[in-house]
Picture 1 (cartoon, rainbow, N blue to C red):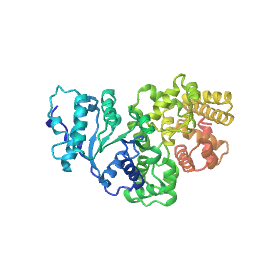
Picture 2 (picture 1 turned 90 degrees about the horizontal axis):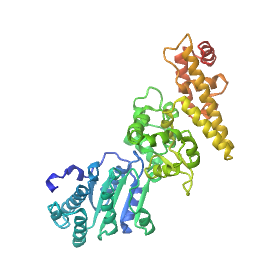
Picture 3 (picture 1 turned 45 degrees about the vertical axis):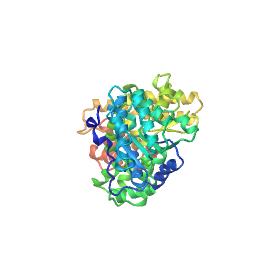
Picture 4 (picture 1 turned 90 degrees about the vertical axis):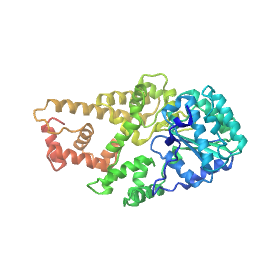
Length: 458
């Protein structure tokens, strides 16, 4: 491959977007890594947390010369990958007139028979000889899966020439010697917990970048509901632009069943995972707290600890709850989307297993919770069966969640109590009740209960 066959757009630094939220605290952290002479900056988080935007913002603020490479799946060819790395460094050096044509240019024209290791060694010598101060950004690095390509970056980090700093943006931790770099204070790490928008950043994003006019209370609620997930806030903002009701009503009802959230997580996360991982995620989504033993009990596997560690390393919306990595939880919206994929029989079986496991291990509160949820799933199944045999079917049937709400209405629970039992917002309860009224053709709880009994739904 010669320089003429390289796709130049892979080497372009993305254009800065207008009205971006200032993330000066994170840019300062990247700059600190450079000041301390660290070898690597790792920006690692799930989709939608603004990794590329942050790195681009730092590029615009730093005085450092930057070489940029947008990684794609074709870069799993080690030779191809290395030539793109060389081209990025050469372009940055020439653009900033470090030493014109000195960094990497001759290597790009070298013999195709030269091995990647030989080329990399020559590149390191080349950089060391010029004394150029350069930062190499490798964005979307999670698309690299071949160890031959990883080995090149590991060798570059281990034998880094003076003045070179590597910045990696990725959805999952790469198989590089990260532990060794941490032990030697040679790595700056920016992860999901740092990338989450603060309420102040969320306010700037929603009201300035997205040109909305939300109250402080609505912004605080959305920030808490999305756990500062930037794409979650953006999707909420897009929905607000098409809103028929008030912003406060939408914010109160915003949850993981919002179609924007579902579409994004399905396309960007779940559909990309192999079936065994999707199955594990679905089956364990009913849990508020996950550990390997209870996951084994629910899934029938014996390797849940390895799966949990894999999910954490892949940044798959899994949050560790202790330093020993024994207990975890899913991001709230992610768990809600996962639960939407479960059928009523699946939920019933899983809640029964969870209740039995927690009871056997002394967690009475969680055992009681899953017993209650199993009973609700059983009631939903019964209502569905009765609805299927009724002589007066509805034009539009009630959803499983609406049936759950209907049963709780019939049991005399208030909106607040229903919200607490189903672990949803009161605004979501109101939305479900309005849907129930519309489908049943009624205007009150009393009428809804009577009509539901006529139809065999209760």
